[in-house]
Image: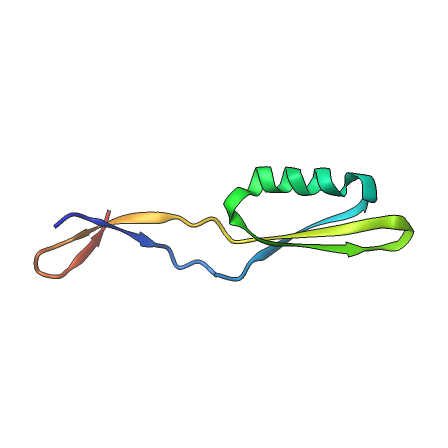
Length: 81
């Protein structure tokens, strides 16, 4: 039987990446850059207004998922490859 991909046991809680003191005119650019660099690992983005018209952007990302190949034996045993 062919092998199948098995996901590593990683936490499913998103991890925060905080960017402080972003002026209003740069908020769209910073969010665009974060989406381009982090891509599909983004869970959600939080935007908070701070003092002096600056904002704090928190990007929550899922940990990178790593898949392993496993070989499934006819006897029912599994060997990691």
